[in-house]
Length: 107
Picture 1 (cartoon, helix red, strand yellow):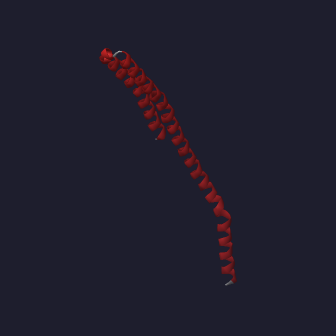
Picture 2: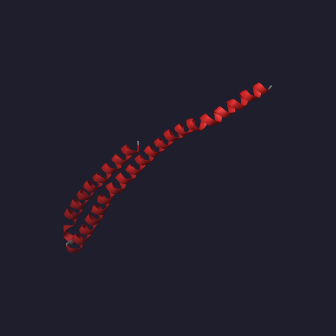
Picture 3: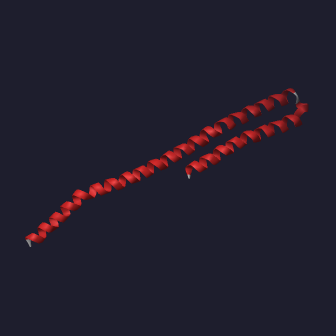
């Protein structure tokens, strides 16, 4: 009976000694994967945040300029609006490129 108890105590002791090592290796792998995913999300957020900043400012400036021009010369509405819409579309395309890059980075 003592021999069985000693073997069981030894088995429990070995499990307690070696299980933290195995768990630590697994937790390092999990932490590494989580860090990688966090860096991907950070890069995607920065890509869309900074990539949309320029087009947003550009569209605001274009709208301001168009309204100023319309206030000064209302008869030129057609040409002003056409050129404004084309310029806004080009600025918006840059924002869409940034969105696509952010989506690719997040994958």
